[in-house]
Length: 259
Image 1 (cartoon, rainbow, N blue to C red):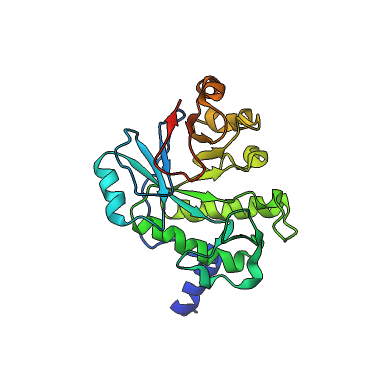
Image 2 (tube, rainbow, N blue to C red):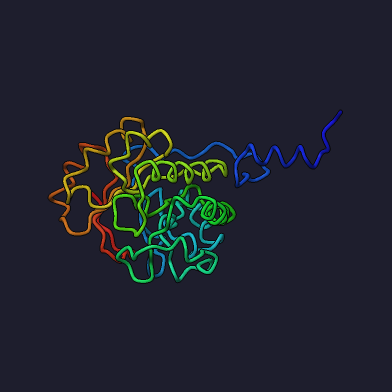
């Protein structure tokens, strides 16, 4: 006897996971190569005059028209999102139940998330990545992806972090978007195959840049920024390691100094 169509459809969704991908099949993902120049700007009026092929900008703060303008200038555009911490100033902040909000992460109005609660977080993060896709972004930079190494208020483990980071990567890939691993250096050997590039802060300051070699050896870009170390102290190593390195100020405005 044939199954009712509704029951069959429900079974398909259950087998596919909690958050089904969009109906249309995604095209090939962008793959940035080692040494690709970039600009990272998360605050202030966006300066589109920087002559680089990649811009990394805030996904909530910028419109589809801004992304399209950058595309017309032959740039790829990365959508910055916080996926491991709650931000009180985002339009969807009220959708996060208090039970998943942990301790502050050091930035005003932000709190770590209980990444074990994928039943709650998966649909919320899927909606955010859907927003990036709808605006035309090429990739996602998910931030705060190393909560297990921090005092979050939750007993997070390395296994919890691997599971959650892979979930975020899958949500992006299901939507045809590339995705970067943000910091989380200790788990690079396990995660390099799941991510299309890396984004790192301060590996030179903490003498950790060699840990990013697996990405470069896999032909994947490492977008790297320092805040406190002058370019004369890290650019030579960055060139040797094929990192895409910048000196920036902590507010991540338009100012930059590239290696």
